[in-house]
Structures are given as structure tokens and as C-alpha cells.
Length: 99
Image (tube, rainbow, N blue to C red; front, side, top):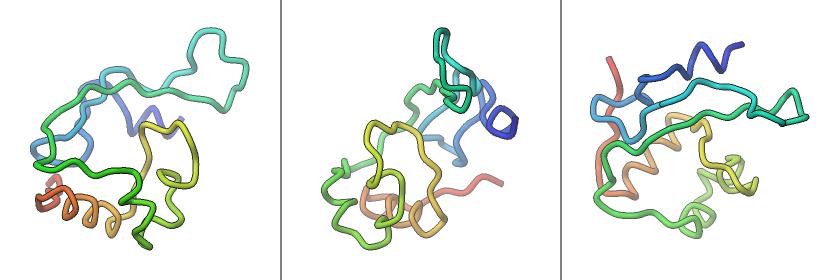
């Protein structure tokens, strides 16, 4: 499963000083009837200098097609590089890329 390969325990979401750490790889929660539903457990890493509200993201055209603003109840989503850069900018820091 690709999600499991990408989201394994201890894996920092791309950043040298991560904003989140995967604590449990992609898995189907016990009792979940939908075989397509996977959960990834994360813990917080470093905070952004400024919070960014969902309303702010919804007003920004860069996020118009992002599941972050189009779907409810999401806690982890993939962002494009442009979206990640914009989010970091809104939050008051430069985006850090892993290398």
C-alpha cells in the first residue's frame, strides 16, 4: 500500500524541523467497514509562529481545489508545493524542504 510506504512511524512530514511526526502508519481502524478508509496517527511537532484559520485558507484561491477546504473532517491532507509554500507564508515562516 503506497500510503504505508509513505507514512511510517517516526517519519517526519517533509521538513528538517517537522510540524508533525507520524506515530502510527496507515492502517484501517478496528471495526471500520470501508476497506478504502485508512487512518494515520500523528503527533505535533514544531508550531507555526502564527495560526492560520480555515476561513483564511478558504478565501485563498490557491487552496480552492484542496481537500483541506473542500472536504470536512480531514486532519491530514497532501498539499502541492505551491500550497505548502503559501501555508508557511501565511503562518509566518519559510517552508523547509527535507534533503
